Image (cartoon, rainbow, N blue to C red):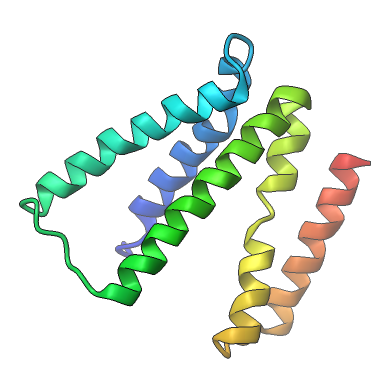
Length: 136
């Protein structure tokens, strides 16, 4: 079995739950409070990862800055997601926001020189059609 399948399956399940649970929590807490506790939960995971590194993470200035930016972008996106799901149906908000890889693909094409096959472009088009069918 490929070494990426199990971690990808774990990501699928945990991200699926991550996208659903805020709909439950925003019934009782405002989106900013939800994000605070969500971030606290991520902090606990971060401490466990730090411990697994014997409290000595690798350091490289530019990469650390990019990692911090990634965390900030994730938190801002998480707050926007919680606000959206607090106000809209989980079925639509989750589908719309789950298409974020399209932006990643476009950025990879533009800045990393990656290419897509005709089959992959077809998949992107079908994802957009699926979004239109679900939202419309």
